[in-house]
Image 1 (cartoon, helix red, strand yellow):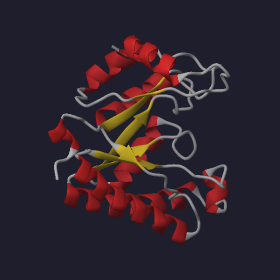
Image 2: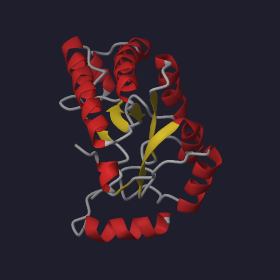
Image 3: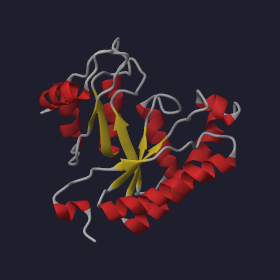
Length: 211
């Protein structure tokens, strides 16, 4: 069987849902199993990265709720253990685990890198979501994480609402070039409450801006 790259189709990465902030170890273990399975799928597809979440998932509304109000230190330890196991599996298949910031447990570039440092594995790196560093200067957080990025989600805005400032593509690209990142820059548009939202209209506009 020929994977996608051999057929002329590049797949920059794939992803799954997981919750490593949950107090229930069975939930965390299920996330590890899912990521490991998709690492093997990614290898067959020719995709170099599998996205893993660093935040809580429904039915929980925050990592504090998911963890039963455990300390940040304890939750970070849970996450690092899970990610290390996934990264070791990723190394065996040549697929990197890209940890995405999503505005919950990981709000800042410092928090993002601290988690990666705690994992301490070459096959665990950053997947930078430009719309989910919830700080006064998201560009500073993006610049901090960019040298460790293996994939991206470039959003229209610096948050997930129309009230957020639009991403300054020139500024963003300057940061990415300075980081010496050489991979793909996947873009993502969101409805953000727009009744007239049409991704077939928004995606080409955003791609033109990025180019």
